Amino acid sequence: MLYYLFDYLDKLDFPGAGMFRYVSFRAAMAVIFSLLISTIIGRRIIDKLQKLQIGETVRNLGLEGQLNKKGTPTMGGIIIIIAILTPVLLFAKIDNIYIILMLITTVWLGALGFLDDYIKVFKKDKEGLHGKFKIVAQVGLGLIVGLTLYLSPDVIIRENIEFRNQDNIIERVSYVAEGVKSTQTTIPFMKNNNLDYEDLVGFMGEYAEPAAWVLFVIIVIFIVTAVSNGANLTDGLDGLAAGSSAIIGVTLGILAYVSGHMEFASYLNIMFIPGSQELVIFASAFIGATVGFLWYNSFPAQVFMGDTGSLTLGGIIGVFAVVIHKELLLPILCGIFFVESISVMMQVAFFKLTKKKYGEGRRIFKMTPLHHHFQKAGNSGIQALLQKPIGPIPESKIVVRFWIIGIILAVVTLATLKMR
Image (tube, rainbow, N blue to C red; front, top):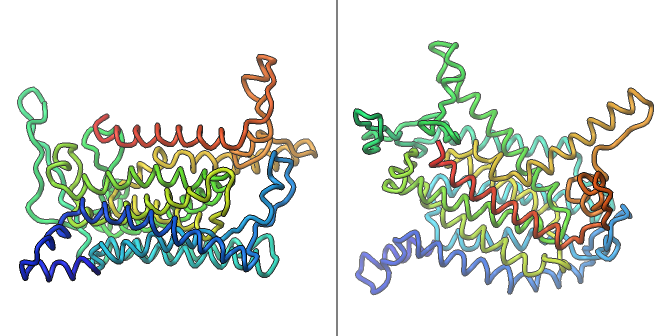
């Protein structure tokens, strides 16, 4: 909202008002404000949660230091949501279609997670909101996002066109004169860096274009559901989900900036997405909120984000990647979320298979999600083969190592724009 105020003041030649035209300035302000909100207001919210006795219920799973977390305030995701929404509403162009979609995503999944936590805490139901209702809500959000990207006239791209010399070396990259609606997306390691979903349904002839949009909406639904649940599974150690999300947020902010800047997009030979540079403000607020939340959530945690935070963070990441046409980079960028989810699926499938075959279920990991496997035993894998048993890995060390892996994956994700 401040953007429109200062835009009006700039027309009146008010000194300094023109600064609000620059994305970089507004992004910096969003980071600062989100950090201040999450650290200062966050303390008051934590005190309120403690006063209301909204504490975490902990089951004894035999993990070191686990029972010490009993009673720690949960539903701290409220801090993250407030710290994201406030700077975005203040500094972003709120009539931008991409910003609108991100605001809807934040509120939608924030409400879903809050309801789940509310049932767990106040209704004393450890299972929380039934899984099918979560899936319905996530599918509904995916439909809203997918159909909006299809129907909105403001959602367009300008396709990158290569011009090569006689030696087949790219001399320059140009863009089509007019923006068009397209089902193209960025694909890593491929020569022209673009994949059109319409090519996958080309066999449908004249119906290929509408079929491509149907496929796109289905993919959006899958991404929203998978990434939000992946973030939810990752939220099992102090600071793990928040820190990993912050790393991903930095990467997505960079991708949004280069996608919305014609010169950088041309240099990287990726599609130009008009209006996507506004998402840098949202990404900045996202980074500030998650880093600020770590002030209280790092080991030993003074507050947990709960499903209110984890479902919201995952959904934001998934939708953000979709709207900047970088969703196929998510398996690399969100590798931590991906591996956590896969470990659970592998464990459940293997347990059921062995129980059916041998009458007794067996496990691949000591415990899932994967971070709990390292908590329970550090003498698995190569150490066991070398007969060099070690004790359980401390929680803080597991979290930092996962962050390091997340940083490596983020760098690889950015490198894929040139590795083709």
